[in-house]
Image 1 (cartoon, rainbow, N blue to C red):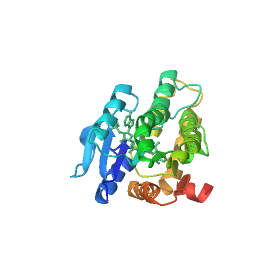
Image 2 (image 1 turned 45 degrees about the horizontal axis):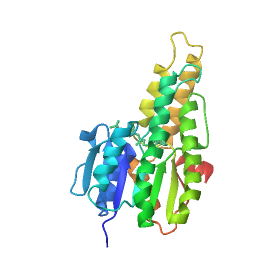
Image 3 (image 1 turned 90 degrees about the horizontal axis):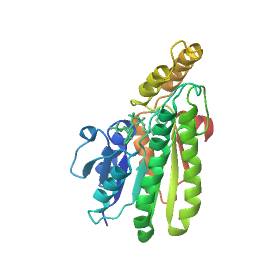
Amino acid sequence: MAKRVILITGASSGMGYAATHLFAKHGWEVYAGARRVEKIPTGSRIHPLRLDVTDAASRRQFVKDALGDGLRVDVLLNNAGYGEYGPIEEVSLDKVHKQLETNLVGASELTKLVLPQMRQQRSGRIINNSSIGGDVYSPLGGWYYVTKRGLNVWSDVLDTEIRQFGLRSIIIEPGGTQSSWLDIAMDNAIHNLKPDSPYTPLAEGTRKLLSGMLKTTEASAEDLAKVFYQAATERHPKRRYYFGLTDRMLA
Ligand code: NDP
């Protein structure tokens, strides 16, 4: 059987890190990208590559390095992302742009780079790690939810466009999952407050509520890696996979 190949973004931590291990363990060639390349797992089938998904040259180089080996590409796992939490009135425009570039535009631009090869193969899957935030919302997560809801719509539309070529675009919606994500998002929620912000009590309350809720419903990054693997290998994949809290609330 031909070697199966996956490109994974955000492979230096959390779910991307766990997925890199899991796919390599199952014999896949894994092209694993992140800015902190030194934190990407190592192993005989793992190819760690420096990648900033917000940078066009870096995205091109990542895909060139992976496809340059003359292999096929079976899956692109768009996983890199973070939460720029904070009140809508106080999160700066450059932070809004950066988060959109990371969570949505980067995924779309990488996808455009692999689709020609996938169309030629007449097989391939784009797996997009969204969030429970793609369907529900709370204060402070406004622009994060926009990126994830946008990713859901983008993926659904793409799926209708590429099925004719034997390709699929799939959404994964995790609930709370053990990783650096929560701490980064909740730190941002406080750092984005202006001095003497009228949103401080709301921010502190929401931070406690979300931290408590997500921590009590946490899945492990390894659990999510298994869901990615299911989406990559199931004969008839679903358009969306819900896991953890999302599974109980939305599926
Ligand atoms: P982590 O913070 O542990 O991992 C995030 C990964 O994204 C890191 O490897 C980081 O690598 C990478 N990343 C961030 N920005 C960039 C960039 N510009 N270019 C390349 N890589 C980047 O969090 P998770 O594993 O939890 O997050 C994975 C995905 O899951 C995210 O999209 C997140 O929004 C989503 N999610 C998380 C949930 C949770 O509760 N943990 C719940 C629902 C969804 P580096 O910094 O080295 O570049």
